[in-house]
Image 1 (cartoon, helix red, strand yellow):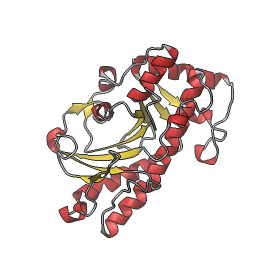
Image 2 (cartoon, helix red, strand yellow):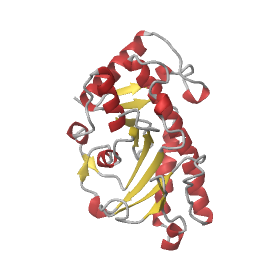
Image 3 (cartoon, one colour):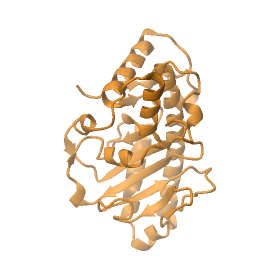
Image 4 (cartoon, one colour):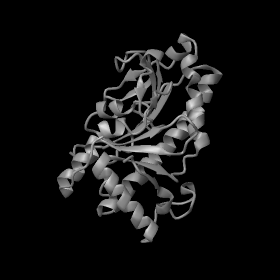
Length: 269
């Protein structure tokens, strides 16, 4: 059985999440969505969502902006990546510099992160790339925050019991360009499962996007959240393993986009 899709607009005060925050509503539809979420967490450690407020057109613009990787080498190097003292990666990373898989990537951090600013490429196309990625990064951070609240409701936790562990100056958008040699068969998760697992114990939630103007997002529970749930509730939570990798067969996309949220301390572990 595949990963279920949950319409999280049921959790918002308005049909469009951008117009209002989450609210309490003990409706039959919402209760059903909560039960589906819990079942999917137990089986897969992940779930799919729609009704989150990030439009398909916005997602498509992000993938379209990935033509940044086709720019001349000196343009890409103008946003050369750096690893800051706090361990965060930012900017452009050439093939094999982060992972030995012949892909190149760009990492976008929060605009408010003065300690680890994101370097942006020069030129008009660099400006366009920045103007697309910055609001997308903000939208992802807001959605990550809301999803933690939804998990609190589903798990019967106190308000902000998970959200309080969210790193406000953390969370990153990773956009990758995969070489043709890497286009091996993979699931619709675009080969991002291994990337989530590689980020270590700090990952709270990961949002995996699809390159087809599709508003459906795959949400993966990171190690931090899985361990926290198991420790606090004694509940088994599936990990993003084989069951996710075999959701639907297909070909790896030329580009992949994922948002990684992090916890702000060791308190989730």
